[in-house]
Length: 295
Image 1 (cartoon, rainbow, N blue to C red):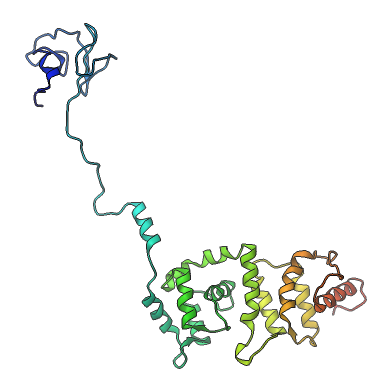
Image 2 (cartoon, rainbow, N blue to C red):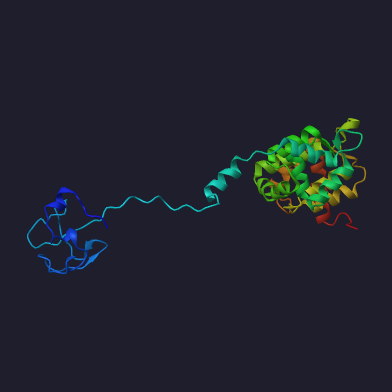
């Protein structure tokens, strides 16, 4: 250790604590100050000083601080910090070229879109079935206009919205997709979109066929089935004369499931419900009163 050349140390003389790290001086003699134990240059006993190493009162202990250069903080070699990794993931942008390459894997040979066969292979790679609820939600997020079809623009914009450009990254978004539609307004938007999604737009279809409506009702409510749903579907199946479901009936059925109790006791026929729902309630009341057979 080098000798301290500061003025406050020069005043202390050869026997000052500035020249000793223990009870004895470097020459082996006795110090003029009371013996005390120093740890890292600081005496164990509590004492006050004047700020440059001189005792404030005779007989008080010295504080000695050995000057040394400040060491830089230790950094891990060859690895990014967790904060850096997090920021890297947040700022990562999806690759449009990767999305388009993925689209080409499933695109129809003649049409510039993914059709039924391609969607089946797409679902197989995603390890889901085409009739699963999450596929319906995925099509909704893609903004698909026609069932069993993804246009190039829908696929590209949908993947960008999901921040996904590979099968693996799309799969990783499934929990987020399912969590999103637990929100009441988000589910309402999905429900309304499902009606249009089920129409055959190529033929100019404006009313959803009853058999398609039944299939879509089962699918859209598969994560949370209203108590009245099965009786409603049974009513539709028993009345083959009901060929189609108008859009207003589809949309108001969601309100119907929320406002009418399981036993339909809360139904108010003075409200502006579609006539098909009036017929359903009447049918259920008659069946409950055993005025009609149930076989």
